[in-house]
Amino acid sequence: MGEKQSIELSGVQNARELGGYLSEDGRRVKQGVFLRTAKLFDGNEEDFRRLREVYRVAKIIDFRSIEEIENSPVMASISGNDLPCPDPQMEGVQYIHLPILDMEEMEQCVKSEFGEEIDMSDFFKMLGLMMEKGYVGDNMYLGFLDGALGKQSYGRFFQELLSLEEGRSVLFHCTQGKDRTGLAAMLILSALDVSEEIIIEDYMLTNEYYRDKIAGERKMLEMSGKVPADRMDEFLMIMDQVNEKTMYHVIAHLKEKYGSVKKYIMNGLGISEDAMERFKDRFLV
Image (cartoon, rainbow, N blue to C red; front, side, top):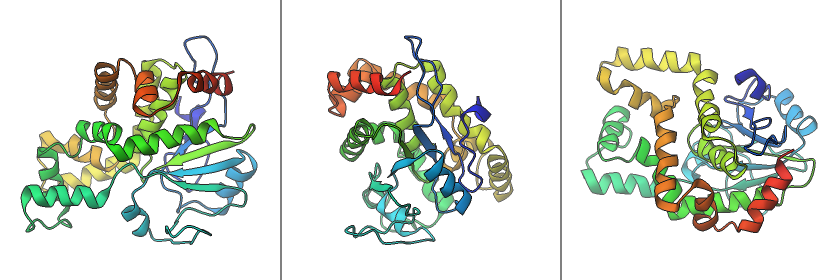
């Protein structure tokens, strides 16, 4: 599945598409329309040429926070937009910033919980405390989906997909292309009636695309001596690894709270039933 889904970008990590997956009615998701990646600033000219000419990208949707964007190594201004944009500017491609996570708000929550003396730059201590309080891990995904900012951004995301020009594609990404991007992919595939098993398989492809990186991070954490063996996978999930239990947990939560993932999209994100049917008609073949 991994090679089939690849969009063959040499500089951009976790770069793949949702095309080809089978829907429950026997149709398949259109090829070359929904592209999911990690951050784009490492991309090279050939990658950007491929996105322009092969995939005819019309929109780049960035799920990162303002803080993540401002801390990126590359900055570029967008006409009429005060937000710094480290994504490459491609002619005819619209850049849309739809943050899912308010980093400043999260930091304030941590500081109010543990006290101002907590140094937010202390990676291991901060993450350990945040895991104890459920700010990361399974509950982090639920926060993305149930939070006001997440609902607003994922709702706008669907509106942008519905308005996509025929014959064009959309690229959506966060930093690592696994959590906020993974949830977006799950929502798209659920709206297209792709099975839960396939959705989980797509989510888990991150571990295949990041295999070497995850192995290096595991070694680094082991050598640090600061991470207990029984918590290693939790730390790796904050970095580049994913766990199928996380997505199963999310889907179960949406079923329990809304009745189904599709009902979450309709009732939680404000996408009408008619729009959902148009979505299927447009993007299944």
